[in-house]
Image 1 (cartoon, rainbow, N blue to C red):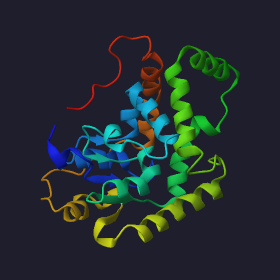
Image 2: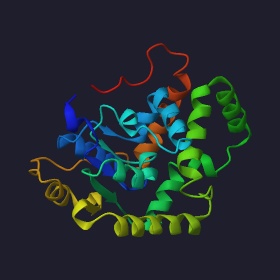
Image 3: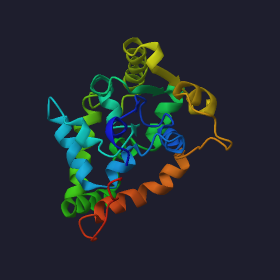
Amino acid sequence: MRNGQDDRLTVIGAGFARTGTASLQAALDRLGYGPTYHMTEVMSDRRKIRQWLAVARDSAPAWDAVFAGYRSTVDFPAAAYWRQLADAYPDAKVILTVRDPQAWYDSCRRTVFRHLIEPPGRLGRVGFAAVNALSPDMRAFIRMLHETTIGPVFDGRIADREHALAVFNRHIDEVQATIPADRLLTYRVGEGWQPLCDFLGVPVPDEPFPHHNDAASFQREDGRRVARLVLGRLLPGSGRRHPS
């Protein structure tokens, strides 16, 4: 871990989930701006789930405690608090990842919104009820999603395509209107290293840009992530170690 000012956030990702945030996480880590916080970090550590529940209920969150050990953040739930983070870390640069809105919503329906929108069949409902009964961490995680993101950002209406698309487009407009141009990069991860490195003032690596967590790989990993979350209470030593 670095000391002093470098311990605080230097890059804030304001882009919604499914806009290339996992690829950006890997890119920032490669460029020396890591460790980079992402929703997968929350799912790997029950303490972080409860930190975000506290954030949702606190008018003045202790951001340095939430992001202790991290230099950057991307994805939800942090992206839902981009205004507060931009104010709390005035020297941090802001990266707004974007993609075609229709493709974004289709990707969300297949991945991060899928279990929240599409009710499971009878067997799935029984299994889900059993998981909720056995796993305080899963119950806390679902509450955290609703209290930090689904409710405040989408007004609970993630199944309403037109509403979600309006939220997505309005979010882009608001970030671009709020963050000064010299502090903001509006970025599509398909653009590769050059605009990101130019914005951060670092050399372009001599290697391909990382492309992580497409819809197919998300679906392959989803069961494993949920299993780790559910079993976190049952397995000693589960959850990722805090970065240092």
